[in-house]
Length: 316
Length: 234
Image (cartoon, rainbow over all chains, first blue to last red; front, side, top):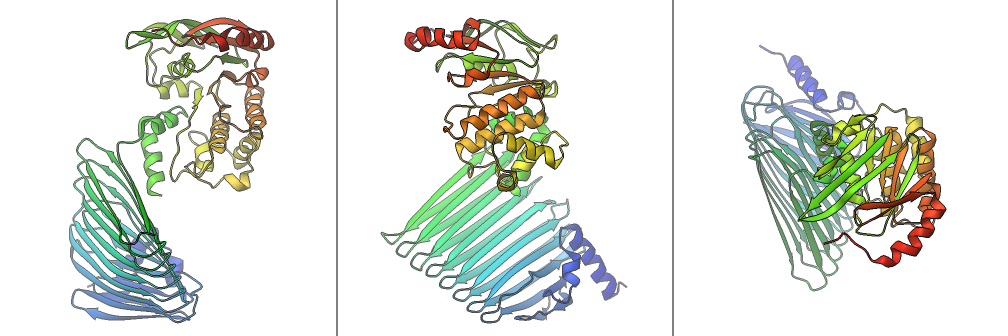
């Protein structure tokens, strides 16, 4: 029987391998939370931010509140993961960044041994006015592809607030990904949604991101960068609705196919219901750019090295 | 160092490179001067092994026939090319770009950036992407060629579209390249740029018409080529 201490050490070890900062995770000044399956193995509070949790049958409910006007000095570190090969983990995340609050969250989701795992996240995020919320989520999966990841979020961004979300899944096989984020953008708010995914083998990827520019002068950028090889397939749906005067939105999708059987699809949806709003989109899908390849080869790289440099840059 | 013998490329029945021969000596700057559409860029591509293989003729580099070598093989022998419109790379920093295929010390990378007038503190960590202006990108391209310490650098119109402030930095970069021991094939349609060349060859309609000293060739070019309106013959 594995002890909690051993369980914690193992998950933290995997967290480190996935690029997480073990030092930050264990610092008393840094708010952090380590969840393995449905157990919270470590939680640390910091001034200005409260992290509360409740154990569920197959996961954890987490409530994270940044107090009004508090600017959290160090990034908050979250670690969600499962070490067994099989199972279900459901994370119900409620975030409330109160007016004037500022926080930067670095989350790692680690499933190094996944053979048949489902990881669900259901997030409800409220960002008050004049607040800043930055969330960077990195996934680390094993090479079997036996995982289904279903992150869903509804986000309200208040007046003059900024919201930056980055989702990165480039290590290991994706498995099945069904990513679905919807943001409601208030007056003069700024939203940036970035997704970076590297699909391999039989990976099946769906990314759906929606920005509703409901406040005057609200701005948004939906940016996705995917590289697909082997038989991986992906569909990226980026939607932006300009519903208020002087709202500005842009959808920017690049998908690179580096395999005979990989399939990439992009569906940008741009719409305006206010005559003073403006929404634009660009999508580029195709093989690796020939001129980029030739340039790198003229610097002495062979084909495989050149592909690595280009892919690394796109997913950086 | 580089000998091109009777090179010929025919596309859609038209001779783009037509029985062209030229020589570049060690540590020499040879400028190829010609108006638009004469086949200068195609010549650069043929020497680097980009896009085309010649229908006839030979490209000899350091005594080896490299006519059918791949781009990588040629690069590994010490040949490189600065593109007229260089590619952009998302997520690749200038520091990384200059270090490709080389193990360079930071001071060396900084030296190469200074040589083309780009202060390292402002440029090292920027990406080689669309955020660089056209002139900045061309200077980064030249710095990356310098960083490769090539035996032969083919510079395809690195001076075109460059403002008057940036042009001296480009010229400095080319002069530095020669001082470091590289031979340079400088493809251009600008008379100003050929001043730093040791020799100038005038190209028209896929052929080298005349080779000589820069002043003499510029004069000849002005009197003959810019009014001839000659493009690749149909």
